[in-house]
Length: 287
Image (cartoon, rainbow, N blue to C red):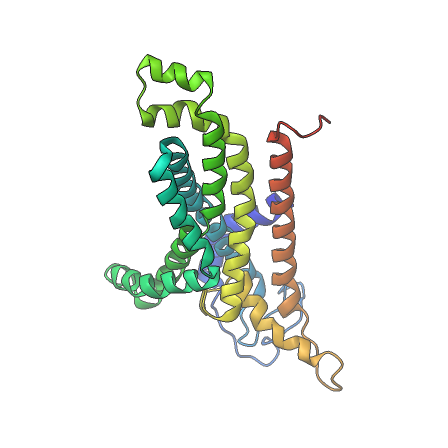
């Protein structure tokens, strides 16, 4: 399911990037239902919902995957260093994690986004047109904001695993051989943590996608005209008020397509994360 959704979104990027914002104001084109010419219908401005959903999927999936990669790097490095060094260093590093945990997640993301977006807009404005620079700045800022605050759980998991492994005989043998801290962590401890790290990273991807969609739904994530599944669903939310209203057509395609694809993607990613966690859990029953 994940492959069937992701591949079309990324393969069609050259076409969706050039067609997602083509507006047509003819009476029979705006808000047209799905047809052979427009398989997913059109929106209020006559833009093809097919190209907007495909580009929105690429943006949402790309943000989720890249945010999870940032979270993986920061969380693994922080947790491994804290667990290996121990003592006061461990206590200080984990108190920082506890402080960040005590702050509202959405508030942290919004604060990072507000602080970084003007900076990236100025940087991108020097090499790109204004509209493109704003869009790139939005995506990059949201990527760093979500990835920069979603590593806390992974850091705790890695730290706990490192604490349980650092007293094992193979680590003592590495020390006796003369290996330094970086070599011990990278070559001896982290390879034994591939399972938990892979499982938690796979579960971080749907969380990041959901956070991006939620922020875009609220209007503080990816901004129009650049689409994401979150702001496309927000655009179609108003159609729910028309259900049961006499004489008012219910334009279901504006809400159903982005919401269905988002729900299917989140379900597939969560099932993948659960499967990886069960696969690498040594205490799981053999099937």
